[in-house]
Image (cartoon, rainbow, N blue to C red; front, side):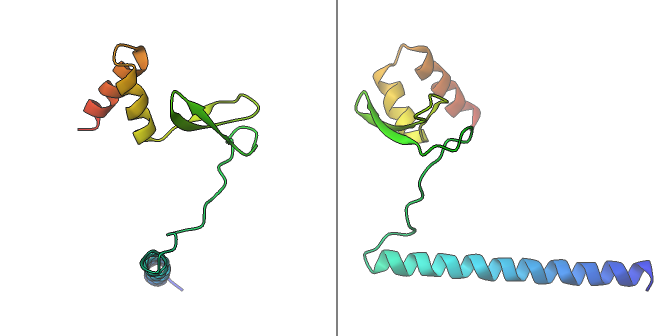
Length: 107
């Protein structure tokens, strides 16, 4: 088998894999939409884990914002909306300035 034939077969295999992947995600999206329309959740909740030690993250209320914290003190995780709330409350703090700078960098 020549190099051209190998390249052609590799290309066909790649296209097939992409098609199967597209079908898989389309099916996942359809099922999630059906669950939402039926009044369910889009996806089952996944327990967040610390990337360092693997411990299940604990929900902790910090200034009225619930954040995920490692019980072994490896860090805390917040999403964008949680960061915005914290930054708004602490307008003159360094964290607010960093978040503000990050939001302008994305534009």
